[in-house]
Length: 494
Ligand code: TNX
Image: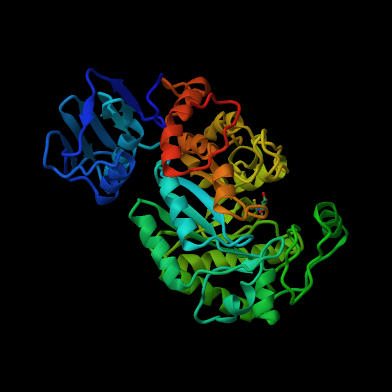
C-alpha cells in the first residue's frame, strides 16, 4: 500500500524502522496549530517529558510553501522555507500517523515537497444558504489539511446579502433574511468576518470574498430599490425558470427560487458606483488577502456594452483599492478590464466556444486564470451513488472525473504559466447542513487538492489507481475528524 498522502508530495522515499510516537515526545519549533493537530489525532500529551523529538525549523532559500520532512526511528526533522511549509509538513505528518496494537507510529520516510500552483482553493456559497462561523471554520480546517490555501466566500447573491456593510446598513437589515427554497438566512457581522479571516490565516488560508456584480443582485433591490433593475423576464429566462422550479422573481420580495441571470444593478446610474465603492472599500479594509472577487457571471439580462462598461469601471476601482480583481470567465467578453484581473473559468472539461473564447481573451489581455471546470471541480454536482446534488454540469461527477484532468490541457492556448491555480466551488442551492457539505465535498476535494498541489499525472504515484488507494488510506483520519464523506464505490474503503 502506498503511504496515505494527499496531495501526493513531490518526492517520497520510504526508509527503515518507524518512529514510535509516545506521550512524552518533545515538540521543538512545531507551530501551535500543528501541535494541536497531532495531539487531537493521537490523544497524546506530547509534553516533552519522555523520549523522542519532533523538530521543526525554518531555513532560507527554499521555494514558497516548500518543506523537507525526515522520519526515522529516532524522531522527526522538518526544514521549511516559510510558515506555510512548516504547517504543510505538519499536515503530512498527521496523514502519516498510523496505529498499531502498541500505539502510534510514523513510518520512516524522506519527503521533499512544494506546490505546483500558488492558488489552491475551495469556495463556499453562503448566499443560497447561510452557514455560520463555526461551519466555515470547520471547512477551513478540512481544506487546509489538504494543503489548499484559499477559501473563496460567495457572500452575496439573489437570495441574500451575507456581509455587514456599515455604510449601507439596509443590505443586511433587509436583504439577508431569506434563502433558496425559503429559510431564515443570516449574515456575518464584520467582526465575524474578521474572526474567519484570522482563523484562516492561522492555517495558511487566504479568504477571497466575492460580491457578485452586476448580476445575482436581487437582494440589493430589497435594501436599496433605486439601485436595482426590474427582474428581466424575457422568453429565454422565463423558459429557463419554468424548467427549473417555476419560481419567478418579484422586485422588492425575497427570491427563493432556482433561476439565475434575471437581476442586475442599474449600470448607467451613477449612485450604483457610489454603492459599489462603499461596499468594496469596506470589504477591502477588512480583507488582508490580495484579491476581491467581483462576480460577473450569468448577467443574462444585461446588454453586453453595459456589462463591459461596468466591469471596466469596477475592476479599475478594485485596483485603486490596492487589490487584484477576480471575475468569472464571462468577464472575458468585456474589453478594457484592469490589467492583472484574474479570470475564473467554470466551463466544462471540453470547453464550448463561448467559454474557451472568454478564457482565451482574458489570457491574451494578460490575465491569469483560476480553473474550476464545472463537470470536474463543482462540488455541488451529485455523486453517482447519491441522488442529492445538482447534475447540470454533465453530472453526476465521479471521483475519477474529478481526478483525471490536466489543467494545462484544459483550454487550447492556456498553458501552465497562464494558470494561477485551481478551485473547487460548493454552490448551496440544495445544501443546508454541515453534514450535506461533508457528503458533497468528500472525497472529491481530495482529487482537486492533488491536481492543484502535485506534479502532473505521470510522476511516480500520480495516477488514478494509486490515488484510489491513498484516498482509502485517509478514511481513518477523516473518520477521526468526524467528516461524513460519501463512500463512493470507486474506492475500497477500509
Ligand atoms: C452556476 S458557476 C452558477 C451559480 C450556481 C451554480 C450551481 C457560476 C459562476 N454560476 O450561480 O449556483 O451554477 O451549480
